[in-house]
Amino acid sequence: MLRLRFVALALLLFAQSASASTIWTFDLPATGIPSQGPPYPTVATLTLTQTAEGVQFVLDPNQASPGFSSSSFIERLDYVYSGPALSDGDLRYDGGAPAELSFVSSPNNVDGGYQADNFHIVVQFPSKNDPDRFAPGDTSTWTVLGAQLSDFTLTFATANNKPAPIHGVLSVTAYALPGVRPTPSNWVAGVPEPSLGLLLGLGLLGLVAARRRAA
View 1: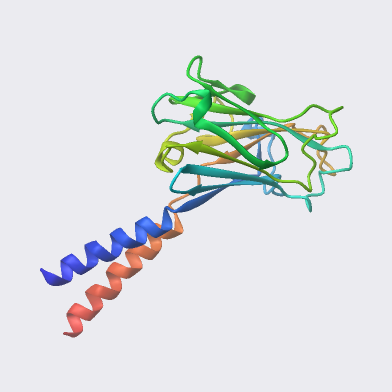
View 2: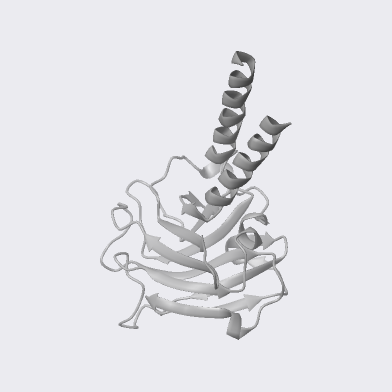
């Protein structure tokens, strides 16, 4: 019984530490699956971190991607959300490239032809002619106050004949990969396969079982 309690406690602590933050990788075009030829370079990553205030987001374009040029910029981000309804006061811009955040309760249509299971949040960045536009070398940071990481990681968006389920859609302007004509402007963060955390948890169980047999 003591060993079982140890296993349960260890897995709980591991799950809590593993869920403190997560990274969504935007590396799949929001186009029909038959037309795709992965792997594609990462366009950007979105890091979600649980804080005392809520969940903080950091959007970081992959400046090294061959699709970016001096005229490229990030235009918009849509991502899923399943917590309680939000108000403007729950969405706080923190720094980096300027962003306007809005909570969308209905309809639940996400950019690129996707549909969210519940709600979604739209992050709009400056337009092409704005000197503060979101260039590939910049980052942008904001916080959804009072939110939990699970409000974003346990809900999805889907679309017919496109990569799904997904967590979000990123819209970029003037992004063109060599040999891809035309390069899609919408890129999605797909839901990954069973996580490394699960595999490590199973490994921990195996170690405990081995020790029990040795004892």
